[in-house]
Image (cartoon, rainbow, N blue to C red; front, side, top):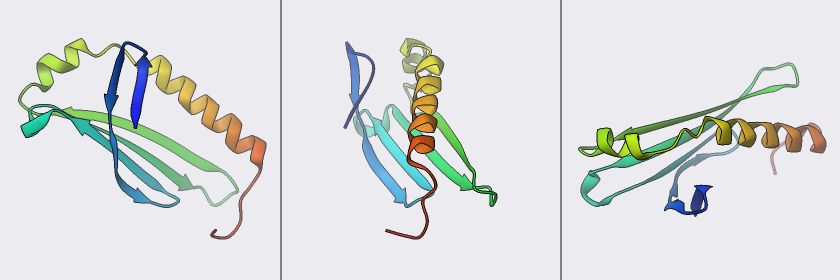
Length: 99
């Protein structure tokens, strides 16, 4: 899967963990662990018919300091993603039971 905040700057990530329906982790990076990124998505049932969504991103590796300075501010893209997810979830209504 390629994630693109800027069409000229795509990077490949893999779904490294999936605990349906509450957690998904994407990971990607450079060989030998020189630079690695991880994005964690979490859904938490609030018990009142609503769900909290949380997305967190982190970087590590020997080149993390240098590489993170090259990454543009993605907060706007993250906000758009969250709003689009919220809109889609609210348009489909509550889901019951496991599929």
